[in-house]
Image: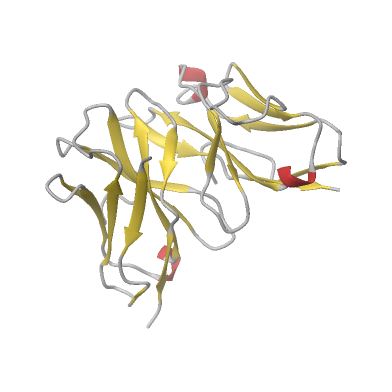
Length: 113
Length: 120
């Protein structure tokens, strides 16, 4: 029961486009907090993939893009490659209690068919 | 190149206190531009933020863990630490230390993580 809701899994064939949604509420994404995305390959620490809703850190391919609208955000991956098979997490901040705090989505496992 | 390294016991008994330290190299923990934090991941599950600390000592905790968590900073050693009390099997997880910029920035730098198992 994460504060941010992601689909547990998505899949796509090589070369295809997939999207991963991240749904929040008026106390987090809808309150104007930025959404960040992380990629976690098996057995490794998460790696920052998208920051500030739609910005890519240096070295992240432009096949990865992010967007935000209202109380939701999305991560899109085009030209799917086998190496993209990983878990993906969205992250934002929530101010429903006395102070803002970090919140993560439950994660989405991407399978490349 | 900033590096973060977690250290501490890999096995903790139920009801005891889990203690971990994150050693920062390649950067100063006393920088006013960053927060330092702990994030955990139970086996096969998602990421959970535990808490964050600023170099001044100001702390911010996950409301669901707040009663059991203490995060502290030692600027002389360029380290920050996590203590989680009264642990149960549900606290078994890989514990990551990480760094983020101020003003709701992302967690850009991560340690490799350390598995802590709670078992008698």
